[in-house]
Amino acid sequence: MKPYQLLLLSLSLLMLVSYGHRNANALNGLPKTITSKGAPSDWIPIFNGKDLNGWTMKIKGHPLGDNFGDTFRVENGILSIRYDAYGDNFYNTFGALYFNKDLSNYRLKVEYRFVGETAPGAPEWGYRDSGVQYHGQPPSTMGMDQQFPICLEYNLHGGNGTEERPVGEICANGMFVEINGKQNTSYCTLPTIQRTFHGDQWVTIEIDVKDGIIKHYVNGEEILTYKNPVYDPQNEIAKTLIVNEDLSVKHGFISLQSNSHPIDFRKIELMTY
Image 1 (cartoon, rainbow, N blue to C red):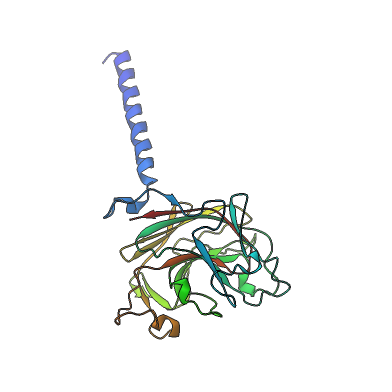
Image 2: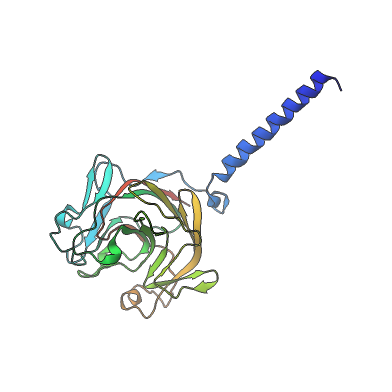
């Protein structure tokens, strides 16, 4: 083979390898559930960056819709949770902001960051702690003094600069899930892959819920998979949500916790299956 022909062949092979890598990377960047049964919708913003339209708050000790202390507010395109009106004692005044739709099969994407200092009088575990709740009971069924809904939770943790505080635990309030083929035995279970984020950096989480299989992601990386959520029949509130003795949980409401540490959300998007 002549030298110039060899050069052309080498260049062609290099272009083919490069093209293959680019396409492989593009495919790897797609959510794994895209190829499963049912075509997904496009990402739909469910926070408009202007106000709390489409959302309803429920704060312990206050009626549904009462935004005590302006806890949930929108400023400069950011949904902020703040406690500056709570005085010198948070007094376990937990709450949540609920999206006003009951959801079943979907993928939720949220960008958040922790800021500032924990509210005075908050529990010790409240430091840089919050959560995105899902499969939650209807907010209209929450008791006046009920602290947390019956729900599953993607636990949000922020690092303290030195210790590992991984994000993405599954916390189950009044429910059980199957992790690696076994029912959970603790309220919260650490993710399989553990990532800690220190400081006030923005972090992107995703929750994928499809046909009883639930996956947690952080910054595009899958960190936990579990399945088959069911109500705990021994939980007094969960018992009221069981219909026809069917313990399975296939749908519910999503919400953002007000857990005593200031937190911001800027993008909240939904993809339905």
